[in-house]
Length: 257
Image (cartoon, rainbow, N blue to C red; front, side):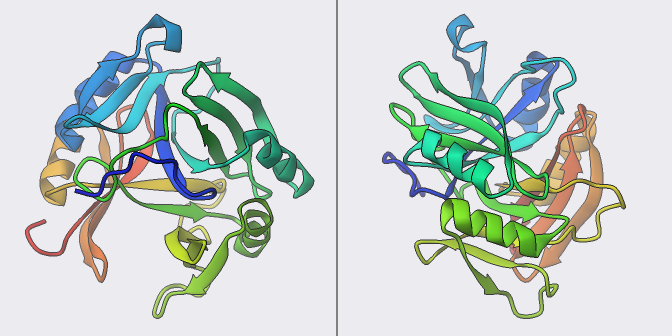
């Protein structure tokens, strides 16, 4: 089981969370879909609920922090210095929408928009490194940055996080891999057929043991299917939304999914 107990390399997607108007309803939805159990961190941390795979933390669900806040999964990128990252964001055409602040002794956080308008978070680890399980059912398996101007986005993420890029044979020409220290860390490209007017955004892909069963649980729980389960060269995938409208992807293997 791929687990981690040390901070993720700077620039690596290291965490994902969701803010919703009804945390209880969200946990009741995601439990059957992902197989998660939940731990409420209590009033000190705003009843932020940790989503667990066994005794490992994979993600979190918490209440909306301000009126009008979009309901969406936020992908967090690791940083060794959140304040320095915030400065680089602003210097390279991005916007810091939540200035860096400490979450107790757990870490330092900020939320920003890249230079194409895509929202992402930044996490500087202290006591908490972010996710300590990955690429297992119930945990993050992949992340895409889907940007209205992928070439501008590449320049931004290279300047801020040092990303390098590699094309994927037979993929759309504007979609490829991004790498951190030479290691594949996710995908970056255009809007991949999203409806006109869709803003730049990151997509979180969660591993599940059985994509079709997870999609059935999505529908039973009041979510909707945007793209039915499909076999791809990289495994079986589906794109769905939860009952609050937050989009995410489900990913499994080609065999037994």
